[in-house]
Image (cartoon, rainbow, N blue to C red; front, side, top):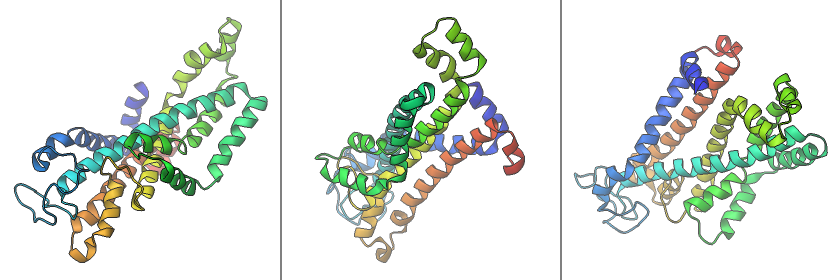
Length: 288
């Protein structure tokens, strides 16, 4: 908590990112209360509820789209689903990255070589074709299964970051003192190393979340998104199929990419703000 408070004081980028992503998260949390009155209680993913291409009206503030769904419901439901996929995948990726990073960095030797080699392989192998292939063979593409698949390709960066920090910390005097006092490795990791790595864990979670969202957009644009929800990536795919440009449907064309860019920028600003706190020299280079 102290780290976050200090980052808030030090960096304007951190403030901008936190405020922006907080607004988007709150909007996603209250989304059902906003769109339910306009979707007659139906979830946004259900097609054919209304007549297609209805003009904006009090019943449908942004009109309806080609599948007979309320456009406002699409936007809010898409924001909720995309953030949920990103956060679930980010949490799962961070958990895997913590295990690989701590084990590799703390144990060293052959264990470190094997785990690091495997991690580097995943970093250099093009993940998009594999991601598409896995998505094709999954029988039911729900938000949770998609988040799990995306997490499989989002953890290597977290593992490398954590490993590097653990290697630098495991020979510190307080760790040696803990070993001399008889503490086992498990206790040393969770009581001595983990608390000091919280800033890096948060940064790794943020990068994994962004990577998962980018992956979701990539597979949804080609029509392989979840079948139980509308996502922002799926809206971009549908906009092309509907001929949104020729129909002049600028809201459907502009809003989903704009919201995605805003999410990515805000999370990036949070990361940059934390980096400025951890490395004060960046404050003089990048400014506040």
